[in-house]
Image 1: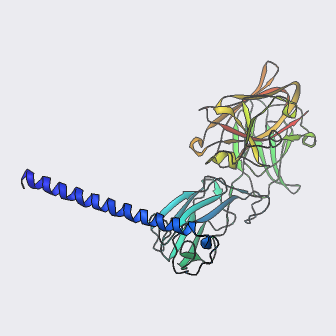
Image 2 (image 1 turned 90 degrees about the horizontal axis):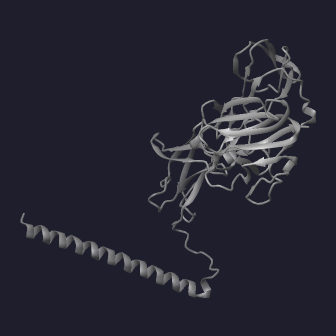
Image 3 (image 1 turned 45 degrees about the vertical axis):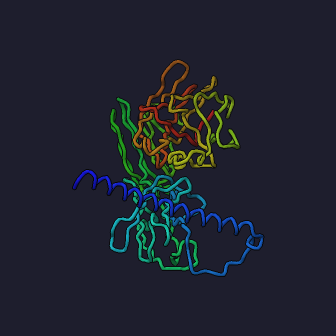
Length: 397
């Protein structure tokens, strides 16, 4: 083919494209004129719909996932929506269709429409919703995979409906207890449930321990070697840090410092004097203040606000009068920082009393419970400078 013929083909193709673009523009202008005429006519302001044969809208069809705090398999007042959980959609033949992570409200959304070509759910069929259960977690609701049948429904917003939405899916981490023994001496650790000892372990000197807790475990008691302490368990994994001899701590005298009373708005730097402490590089923020912020949502256990280390830089809380640092809940702020290492350093005056490292998750808080006496300053930092989420700081005077 000669160069002249190629040029002719190119010119013809460009002419066809130009004609198509012009036709699209004419159609768009005509549609806009019709819309303008409808809007200009007051009779259309509150018109009753008479033609229900078409559906041109798109609807978010949602799978809801929650943190099952009480592990009873039912979404209740004690439970919280979970952010960042992956949900996958499959067709009736098991073929993968789409995936979506839950948002700050706990919803994984899939577009549904018979008219939008980009919608995940477009035709009547059976679809399967599969919630990806994180490693070390389980689903007390036992419904992490659900099949839903869809049928045509002309006149509905999307043109498709199902008999019902997927049932809420509850997730809970397998609780664990961790800690380290100092050199010299040993102790006995007892796990209790409803006042009865269900398990006992001997803690050897200079050793680390970590083990899973039964669902009904509610208290841990350590005796011997001057390490005597008692801790009421929470719904979250717990790390006791380095165990060293100290006087027992009275949990009954403990007070929990939250961050809901720092501000009624979305965000505020925590001022010195809040809860009688001095604060450095810690901000209080509503858990839904930042979009796609999994750890800010999942790390929030009470109220609507959490604290976090500003821009991931080391932060401190302190007081001239010594206090007992009982426990605190810590999380990674983002799934991108899953597995970030936290360093918690506790000081009494100029003396470093304890220094503990622990791995954080953006899916669940870790309860760090060192139960340290005569503390005047605590420093919080992360190895890779990702933000650390802080909630329910427990101190005693």
